[in-house]
Amino acid sequence: MRIDIDLKQYVDNSYPIEIGALPHLHFDKKVAVITNPKVAGLHTGYLLDRLSAKELYFVTVPDGEDHKNLSTVEYILDRLFEHRLERGSLLIAFGGGVIGDMTGFSASIYQRGIEFIQIPTTLLAQVDASVGGKTGVNNRFGKNLIGSFYQPSAVYIDTYFLTTLPKREFSAGVAEIVKMAVTFDSEFFEWLENSKLESEAELQKAIKTSVEIKANVVKQDEKEAGIRAALNYGHTFAHVIEKETSYERFLHGEAVAIGMCMANDLAVEIGLMTQTEADRVKSLLRRFSLPTEYEIKNPAAFYESFFLDKKSKENRIRFVLPRSIGDFEIRGDIDKETVLKVLKKYSG
Image 1 (cartoon, rainbow, N blue to C red):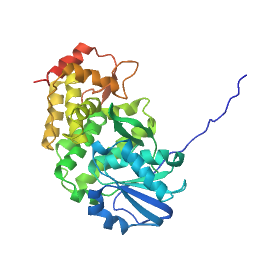
Image 2 (image 1 turned 45 degrees about the vertical axis):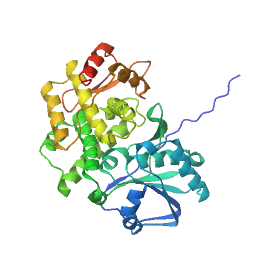
Image 3 (image 1 turned 135 degrees about the vertical axis):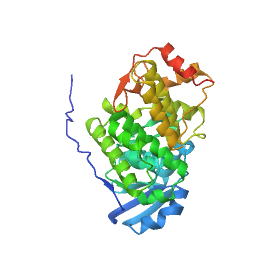
């Protein structure tokens, strides 16, 4: 005997991304703002001038990849239960990518899912992490291996928050901008080569273009069944680097910068990219003070760590590789010897 449950339906997960000064927001419901001590200390006043709610609570958690885990998520959930948030309540992610990922994941599992919005305060979060609905945490096996696809109901990108951003954090965000350009837009890459991202106009253009690229990709492939995997360019290598260094030595964008260089070397090795093109990418990353080198102590162990990556499939590693500048290929057919040859270049 068979009984079918027919749940075919169209779900509209569309949402606006507002770039500009944070508008005045009022919510006739309970709202919890999830943030960290640094952002709270710098920007709570600015936020409260523009935010009101029926009941408003702040939940402050430690920031940093080493705190991006289930223990911190449980702490967030406990505070939400203590404040008696309901299914009709709202969470606000107020911080960088770590805060955004944990808030989104908490929203996706609290009472089986409540609404949340993103107010990103770092360049990396504004151009990448806050858009697209990827949420999650790390565990001892790797980065972002526990999580969900859960879209925010809105994203508000205000460059005011970048005025207090340390230079190193700013550069980490530039890495994700370069990622978008190398894989999708050669003209944007050339523009970046001639820009310092110092003026408000340049910064707005870089953010807008990056968000438009990512939004277009997510629109085509929300849950990373195809083209969205290209946004992981550099990340397969970067996640291993972050895990090897216990998430302490590099910011995420810094690890991605190194990962892009490694991916480029692999692309050159198999003939997808010229050495001149790889050098252009490396030069641009260095101009924004991003690291491009990393010593791999054990190439064989580094290689085995790839298999814990979410993008590996049927015991095959899928690499996102640039095809020249402005295009990409996703390859799952590169033999181990070729990959090890590239990794050994970084073994000193």
